Length: 246
Image 1 (spheres, rainbow, N blue to C red):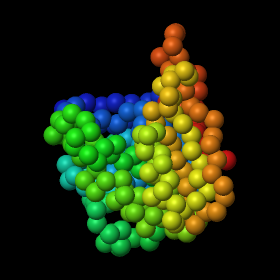
Image 2: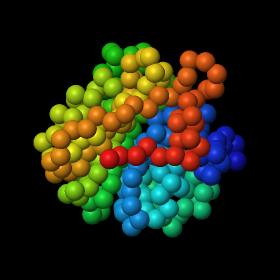
Image 3: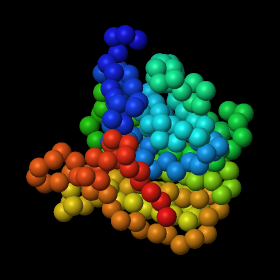
């Protein structure tokens, strides 16, 4: 544990140990955490929580909510538990081992008020150069995006919120996969630069929601000159701002 590099999130409020050779929580995890809108008393599930980057940042932002992280890799789950202890969050955050390829009912848990996920961005091995073995599970979805959306729909209660961050070019797939049982969609495009197409989208839906889809103002991450991040993105990364939903 002492040899594992440690990062700081939310301007130092969250300590995160991550193996240097595996997938490392970054901007997508930070945005997912900032988009978690769990009220006090809510139960929140993150599927594929990794070492807990998004999960612990969301828990720090929402101190009145209870969090469960689901991770299929035992070694990664063990490191996530160490990170929970490192941040003194064991009273509110729990790490379970499990796979979205298995039925949600196998966990023996009641449906959650809020579920969130950063699913692997690819399900076709021919779509990109093969990732390093340590990153394979984070980049390639064995059961495809459908396995993730199906699990999330089972894991959330009626009226509960589902929040995803994913590739912008999969937006149509996300909406169609969730639409049979969810609605009230809100979509926030994420642009690297103001003059570039969105590469990511944050999508929020309510199970059994009926409201029309809303396309929200975009988040731009980087200016072309000057600072590394825009003022809005910097505030989100430091934890002084949230990504709000309507």
